[in-house]
Image (cartoon, rainbow, N blue to C red; front, side):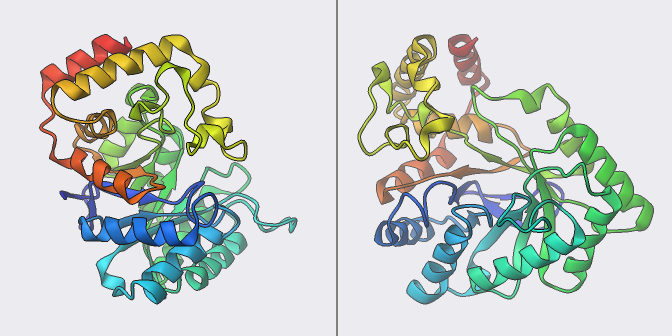
Length: 319
């Protein structure tokens, strides 16, 4: 495994991370989740991402239980990231980025994760109803209390990032250190919409989600076939991918991409992850795994020597 510095900041993450959206505490049973996380740690993965909203806290509960009750790891061995923003109940204050909700969300996440601090805590989205100063001061105060080590954002625009940086500069507050955008070969808008440039300007490391485009770039849906144990076959979680698996043009591109991956003795999943990691400012890719074998496969991406020529071949496939 390779480890990368989070932007200009000192903390290091594994280039391959493990996420828990739609998996642990939800569609993946506890025994399989345990085996996946055990395999991840054995293969050098130290970065694990979750959020309070993932199955209404069950993902955090699952990670905390597996880390500290089942595997009995030491807290220093892992980097844990979580997030808040989305409504967790009907309570009108149990959502957004108000000081009240951020503080209460952090306290609940700490309890579910069985830890007394969280390495990176993110705003899961931007909250237009809460002043930026309130948001920044809330996270700064939680860092000063030792409950968080760093804070970051997810899916914020370049303008949101600029505003947060300006507020933190004005009031001498801890800045957000990281952004968590969607990024993959077929979802690369951050390269052109100013987000990647803003992160580079402020030294923020980017930790990207859905690098395999919900599994599409793994090649598992070749020919439009949907494996029974895949995300696309699960009506509870397939709303993010069902359109893609019926797009014949996109599936044909993925088939060509799969052939390219095999020509360099890699799997399409490994090549898709390596494509993301070709950018120095991409610190880690958040991967989902419902089988230990997928964890091992994904780890191989960190070893691919990604050349400019390989990048050009991929651009020619996807246009």
